[in-house]
Length: 166
Image 1 (tube, rainbow, N blue to C red):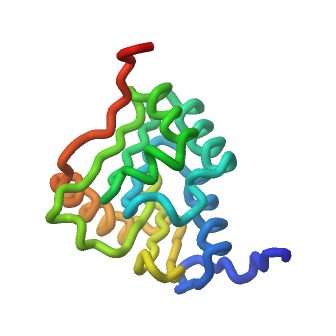
Image 2 (cartoon, rainbow, N blue to C red):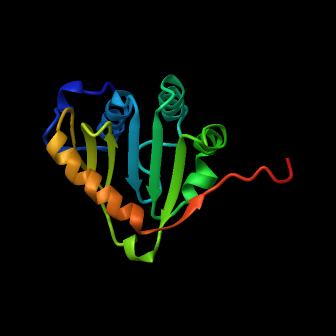
């Protein structure tokens, strides 16, 4: 089934998992130096795919000052189902950080991605494929960035890669 790109209109509420995946790709590929993600576990949005891996790898490798920060409420899916992203964490641990929230932040049911303090996508509720994305929306991105900083303060640990036994 062909995707209807006309349905991907910025600054409107959009519904559908396929459109959500496409909009995430738009936002991710717009990133030049800063990429932040808050998600429950990365199980929605096709994050385990080779396509997302290539987008993240290109982002991390093209700019020496790029940085990716991910906050998850549960890291099990990331660690078990996203081996490509976990591999990126090994390769780019100086440019990529993955945190897990503490119990106080586990109630949040939305998720969002911000790039370069200008572009965003926000899934309204994790259980429903309703979202909004925008390009060059500095005001709303600033609000979400403030929320991201608050969530960052509510993290309990950093997902790390150990070289022991290698």
